[in-house]
Length: 94
Image (cartoon, rainbow, N blue to C red; front, top):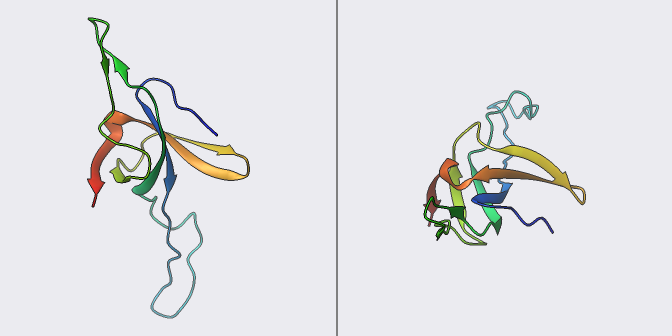
């Protein structure tokens, strides 16, 4: 499995199939980029100037809201993931 470094978080973006009123399924390049995802793995945190670690506010299994164009898409073991910095996470969805 992927283990993120520093303050990075690995997400599995949640996507939904979109249909028009007439029942036509939209192509993925036409749809909006997803902005919610499930936290798969969390790094150990950001190192502050005084040497202390600041742990991310999320944990594995959390559903989160993230910035629309945040992170880098990676493929591992046939699955697509998104690796983002903790600062790009907007909220935890409860």
